[in-house]
Amino acid sequence: KQEVTQIPAALSVPEGENLVLNCSFTDSAIYNLQWFRQDPGKGLTSLLLIQSSQREQTSGRLNASLDKSSGRSTLYIAASQPGDSATYLCAVKLNSGNTPLVFGKGTRLSVIA
Amino acid sequence: NAGVTQTPKFRILKIGQSMTLQCTQDMNHNYMYWYRQDPGMGLKLIYYSVGAGITDKGEVPNGYNVSRSTTEDFPLRLELAAPSQTSVYFCASSYTGTGAGNYGYTFGSGTRLTVV
Image (tube, rainbow over all chains, first blue to last red; front, side, top):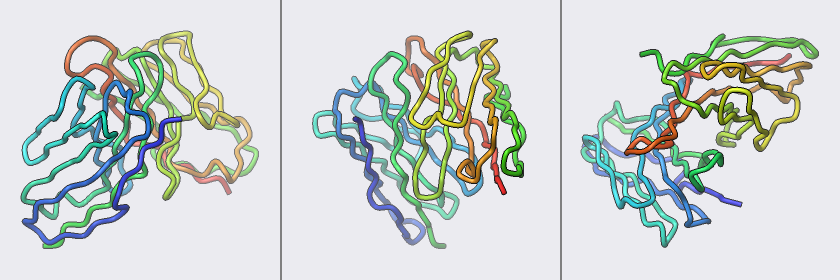
């Protein structure tokens, strides 16, 4: 059974700092991996989607990397801002069929001004 | 483009009551899903559908039912509400084709349900 773990569960950093969020998964035979952002009381917003054949994806100040063989992904946030404060969720899809996403429990990020 | 729309946003039910959570997507996604999110527990899959007329159970289906009569709509039904069903419910859809967005998920904004 695929399990997704995110460490740390919570993180507090000063504004301007670069930071890394970690995601690990037990079954390396994934189809893709997706990072989401969730603001308190809100839904999930997709940030980056990495297909299994890709090593990284970038969007603005965000960069997500994928190392399938070691079962790890990282989300790098450059020059953090208070508006980045949210919970960040990692999710993996096992294959291209009808298997659904498996989510980690998320990392709650606070960026202090 | 509205994406995935869920209604209602909030609801309070009494034990034993029933209700339907509505979900509609306008992106012509063939896959749709219902998740529940409990504090500290992450998201758990309730039911999913790979196309109109096809549904399947997820990790926590007990106490729920779904139907998928059209590509756009995927309602979730609670027949006899129980306090254990107090949660935030999210509907999602995904694109299954070729290209960079393949199997990327889009979520609705959620329905916060309290059963008392």
